[in-house]
Image (tube, rainbow over all chains, first blue to last red; front, side, top):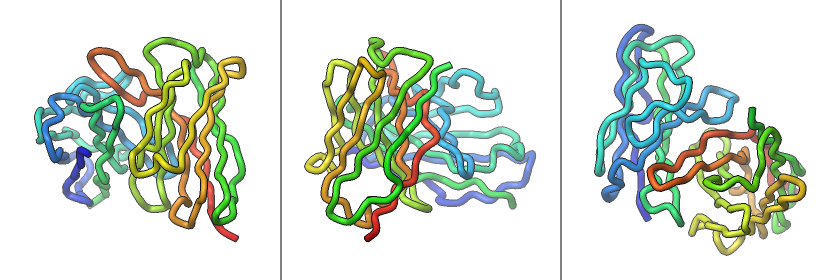
Length: 109
Length: 122
C-alpha cells in the first residue's frame, strides 16, 4: 500500500503571502498525483491532477510540481477563500487502489 | 451540469449495516471512462477512499474495508450504492459519493456530492 504523508499539518499564512504545501509518497507514484481543496462544511474540490495540471476553473495562483515521491502545491498569493484544508491523492496503482494524504490546513496567521 | 446526491439513514445502530445511495443527474452513469466512488471523512479527520464501481459492475475496494463493503450499480435508475456491514462508532463519518474520471493519462475525482453524515450509535 502506498502511504501519502502531508506536511505541515497546519500552515499559518497571512493573506497575500505564498503558501507551500508538501506531499510525500512512500514509493514512487510518477506524476500520478492530484490535489483537492476542502473548505469548511463543503465537499472536496479538484484543484490539480497529473501533479501539475490545473483543473477547469482553478485560478493560476494554484500550481503543482514534483514527481516520484516528492510533490508541492503552491498558492502564490493567498486569498481569503483559500484558507481551507488541502489533500493530495495518488492514483499510480489505480486500479485497484487510491490513497489520500492526511491533509494540510491553511489558516490565517 | 453533473450532480450527485447521497441519500440514506443518518443514524445506524452498532453491528448493523450502513446503506447509502448516490443518485446521479445531468449525465449518464453508463458513460465510459467514468467510475463512481465513495469516500468518507470522520469528524475532524481526513479523507478515506472506500471503493469505486464501473457501470458494468466491476468493483475495487480499499483493502482495509474490503471484508465489510459492497458496492452496486443500478443503471436504470442512474444510481450506485454502498453497503457497509457490522458498523461500529469508528464508521461514523460524512460519506461522499463522487465521479472518478479515469483514462490512460489520469485519474481524478472531478465531481462530488455534498456528503451525508452517518452516525453509528445505539
